[in-house]
Length: 125
Image (tube, rainbow, N blue to C red):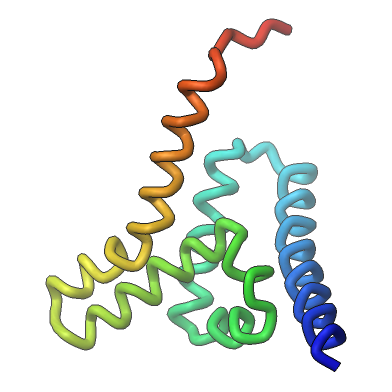
């Protein structure tokens, strides 16, 4: 029975993460928005859905399928800020940064390591 529960968790994560990515692909195909604007849009959507109390149930149900996409980063920032706000104004501001610090640190460290391994070059058309 344990294997079925794990498979079900994988399927939920894949379905939700895939749905978020599918929505992003539709936005890319149907609009002239740049990749940066789409990323900001999805991050803000994660923040707004968290503030409305709609993203937390999705995270609890789908797990990594909801937390890995960029909207999950917005959820992480909003969740940290809301938890910090219970302690005061300064903690509301620093709570978001504290909640996201591990992910941001990992991104910076691994990007640096990748820059040591690979050589960048200009992409020609």
